[in-house]
Length: 389
Image (tube, rainbow, N blue to C red; front, side, top):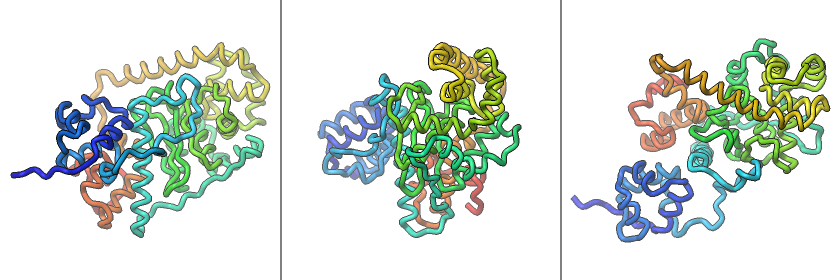
């Protein structure tokens, strides 16, 4: 049998692999070919088969059609995110971060494609919480609190970070946003990013972060989208860009309204990790966020913050160690599907599955977009709340 080979531009294949952050060996492993085969494609001495090309598109997180471009894009917008990270990180993305950004763009494009088909799939029209950087951060924070209904929560909801995070994600998603989480990206490199516009604005949280960190990041990125721009953030407090400082101030004010926080903070003495943790827990914030809020309100100094910064880092490391220790010796929980829904976002999973049931997406489209084998689709549909598949 003669294999059907596809005529593609070698420099396009090299561009797709390179911008995905994959070395030749890793790309070959993901596609299921030898490194020599990748070299031959990119040198133009051999063309890939249609199956190999589809696998390459999947590995590089690119639409299949992108493999047939006449030349690499001159001004690709995939990584054209305003970079609000610390100077040492700005302009540099690890392979894991690049793949996460590519995946988010692909999800946004897929949602738009499905909606363009005219299918009634239940994806709500995005209700953006519009903000203006000309307003005081407290005013924007109050708008977010009011529109999300945060003031109606009980104190015990704020004291339980996992409960609060779940509630926030569901509430934000009900307004037409898509909240996703990344894998294998160090929190020192990225805490979150946002993609404004499109069929659904996307807010990405770092899956390695602890719950209180994700809560703060979610509100921070919500402010970015409210300002109608995207952003790549590590929340390092070192950014000199006014938009980043503004989103920080808004996120802090959402969790810790000035009046009630000042009253509680006046009784928080001395400024050490234990006192800050106790103060922060009643507001659903981290100890670090509480100290930054104190700085903004004139109750502490930046010098005190930078003195405490190594302590905050040590606390995070201990949290991850305790998390691993708690899992040792136990049977691994059946969380594969839960993590899949968490990472891709429940509205995205539901929309893709309904589009497949509606005939708008093929089985191959579904497996590519959800990054699973087709035999796992029924279980994922059950867990995500889609019935009848």
